[in-house]
Image (cartoon, rainbow, N blue to C red; front, side, top):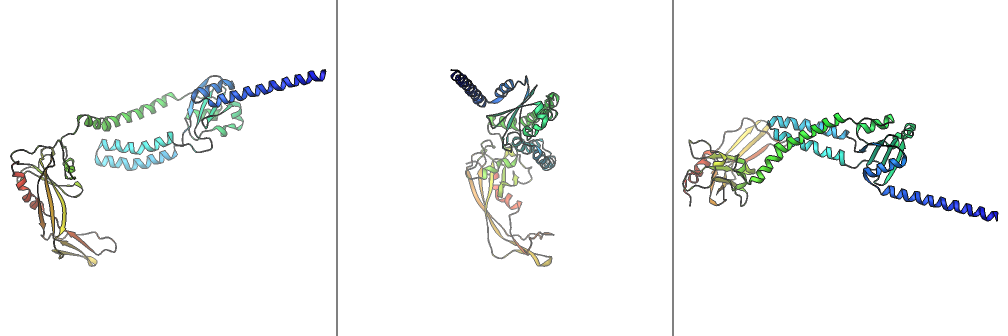
Length: 363
């Protein structure tokens, strides 16, 4: 009888333990399912750590960021100052700062735990890693050599100080406010100088050309500039001439007249192709060491179109055959003792050929 009672008591105790184990397992499952700051705060309450003072997020080490920043500024600042352009300086600063900054803040954290989140409490620290695993360490445990286990790859100074000292550390509010203000001012400058004008142009639509290079797109196949000056019924019609790679070669309203402004240009001329017109050079320039430069006559084809509509006004060819003066010096690649160069028409030749388009009446 006594044996049966003992067995029953033991069975009840085992069943109770099993139930308690099941309850603990259920709590563990519930705990691993919790995410975010709420899960950290709940674990802190379960561990008896008291109030949560702050929640921190682990990030990558920023050492590479500062190396990138230094190298980028060495390149970006001289370029911006050389161009005397605040716009260029801000664009380059975005290109220099944004990619490594995003990588440090949001790039994957090396190590077996992935990115970890920390809740610094009155009585210890709760760490969440892998999204679902939690570890609670009291300040006493951390002081006995447990700091290395939970120390982040990189994080806020207050977090690192708390782990080293073994107690919560006051959040450096002023320093953080200054950092946020500096970043905010930089972003505001980027928006004001770069984004806002672009957005305003987008809302206003296409604008009249403000520089000759704005008209270079007319030389593309089927190109036009919808806000260029309209082709007037009577001349003169200001003309801009573009060569290879959209480089402006000249702009004219006729001889003895000032160069037209970009928004006055009605006609665009495009140098399309050149063809060597003779296998014999018109001149050969000798240099020391047996080096030489030969100039060959060439024929150039030019298309003339209305700037606003892209309508063709005509085509002409020019032959360049006048021997130029030899340059005082010339650069040759290693192992290359001879260079050949096709001649290009002079500005006077182009102006003479374009004269009929400058003076011509609209059809």
